[in-house]
Image 1 (cartoon, rainbow, N blue to C red):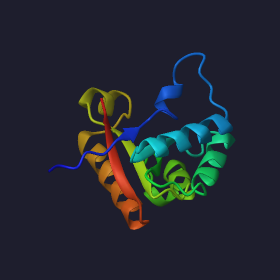
Image 2 (image 1 turned 120 degrees about the horizontal axis):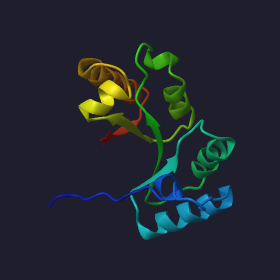
Image 3 (image 1 turned 135 degrees about the vertical axis):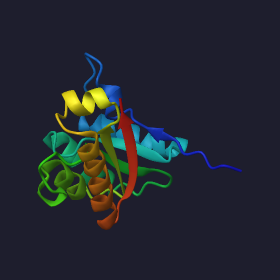
Amino acid sequence: MTQVYIYDTTLRDGTQREGISLSLEDKLKITKKLDEFGVHYIEGGWPGSNPKDAEYFRRAMAMGLKNAKITAFGSTRRKDSTCAEDANLKALMEAETPAVTLVGKSWDLHVEDVLNTTMEENLAMIADSVKYCKEHGREVIYDAEH
C-alpha cells in the first residue's frame, strides 16, 4: 500500500489572505492541533522574513510533537550566488527544522522573465539548493511553482 503524507500550509499560505494575521501564540496553538490531528508536515513559514517566524521555529522545535515534522519554507539559491552565501538558505538552516520546503520556478516564462536566467541555470539553482540542504541533514520537499 502506498503511504500518503499530509502536508499543511496553513501557517504560511493560509495567512496570505487579506485581513489574516496570526500571532505567535496562534501559530503555536494551530501547530499543536495539527499534530494532534496526525498531520505529517507543518509548514511553519519563511524563516528570516520577520522576528515572529524566527521565534516560531525556535518554540515549535521545542514542543515535542508526536506526529508532525516542522518544515521551513524558502526559495532556491539566487542566480550568481553560492548556496553558502545565500541569505535565504542560511535562514532555512538556522531554523533547525528536520525538513525544508524549497520553492523554485518551473515555468519557462517565469524562469526567463522573473528570475531573468536560463532554464539550465534554473536547474542548477534547484539542484545546488537541494544538495546543500541534504548535506546539512535536512529532508527536502520541492515545491515546483508555476
